[in-house]
Structure formats: C-alpha cells, structure tokens
Length: 233
Image 1 (cartoon, rainbow, N blue to C red):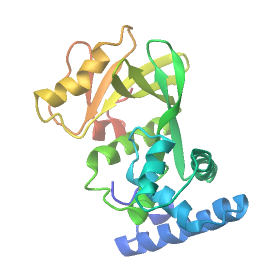
Image 2 (image 1 turned 30 degrees about the vertical axis):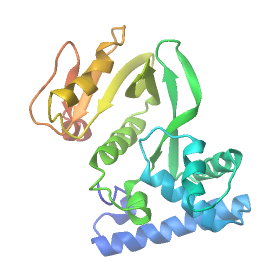
Image 3 (image 1 turned 90 degrees about the horizontal axis):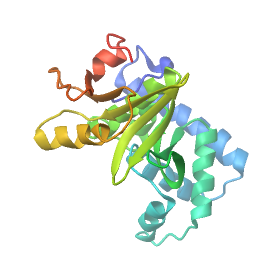
Image 4 (image 1 turned 90 degrees about the vertical axis):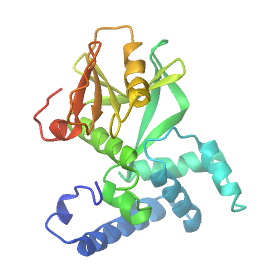
C-alpha cells in the first residue's frame, strides 16, 4: 500500500525504495515527458502531476485543475492540461478510465478517473498512501483487474456511481471498492447502486472486512482474498 510493488524495489528498505522511485520517476519525467514533448514549463507539469496523484480514483475534469491553479494565480487552458495528462499516460505513469452511462450504454467525455501505475510513485510525489486508504485500495484493485486482462470503465447510473465496470471475453462484472463497511449508511452506499443495475451479470463489493456481508445476490469479497487468488472472479 505504501511503496507499491515495483519489482526492482522488492527486498530493499524504505529509504532505498524512495531513492529507486525518485531516480525512476525523474528519468521518466525528463526523457519520456519533458524532452519528448518539448515541455518548457516544468513547474506547471509538476503541479499537474501532484494534483493528479492527490486525486487518484476521484472524478476528474480539467476544470478542477484550472480552478486549483487559479488559487496560485496560474493561468492555463484545458487543452494544455489534457495534453500534459496524455503525455503522462504515454509515459506509463498514469492510466485514464472513462465513464460509461449504464442506462444509455455509451461512453461519456471529459469527466473520468485516473490511477497511478504503481503506488510508489504517488508516495514519493504526494505521500499519504496509508492515510488515503480508500483511494489506495481502489488503485490496487484497479491495477490487479488490469493485470487480469479486464477492460474497465466507471459506471454512471443516474446520480450513482459504480467504481468498476469490467469486461473480458463477452463477460461483464461490476465492482464497488471501499475500505470497510463500517455502518448501515456505508453498506447502503456501496450495495445500492449495484442493486439498481437491471441485468444478471455478477456484482461485487470489495472491502477489508472479514465478515461476509453478501446480500440480494451481490457478493461481498475480502480484498486480500482477491489479491492472493483465494477468491477468483
């Protein structure tokens, strides 16, 4: 959760991991982003990276960054922001996940989510991986679903959201991710959107709880069991 799972960092202590990630990140930014795309405003790029890392798993639009930078009296166009984000995607630092209207069955533009390819990068750039547990767990589950070969979108169901709509080999599954199902309000928030989806595809709520809270045909899955392969989907 804190320093990700980059193979080159395994077996090293925290200080060594930080150095490896910083060297790797600086190399990617310099060669694959700045030099390749002839970026001159490095400070602006850094601000966009930090904002994106801070908001992994959150609904995102370029307007969010415009408003964020205005506070520091930095002016930037939405086109430039999307260009910078595409450079970061091309450099394999972040992944963009588009939204899908589950009623109209179409992809939606301009509001999406971003996830970091390895949480070690977020830790050295922004920190707080172990504090932002919900975001961190969602990013981990996303990376594992990608590893398993799923194509992923975010589901929009009226005013509700489904974290992951996962498709592979004509199979669709729906997944909600949360840290713990702490109370009835949390249970309702996570299960209710899945219950409103009017099809027979499998539906899951992932959390760190040890107790099985499956209900109404929606399966509750422990995240560790999913990651270790004890619970296959």
